[in-house]
Image 1 (cartoon, rainbow, N blue to C red):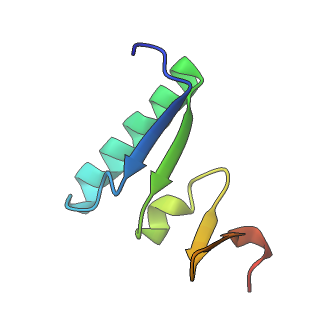
Image 2 (cartoon, rainbow, N blue to C red; image 1 turned 45 degrees about the vertical axis):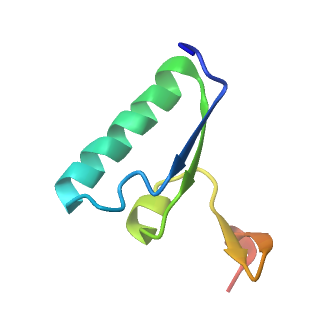
Length: 70
């Protein structure tokens, strides 16, 4: 697929050093803008997650909007 509507990435930077992870994440954001594809990224890296437009958290099998959590 050359023009996907959605890109799914499960821990795309999980085993990378900080600089490489940053570069990969920047490329993903660039791709998001260039082809207007939604990105769904699963990550434990809060630093990268906080750069996303929308953050959801999965807690005990329930998906929550992170902006409403304390």
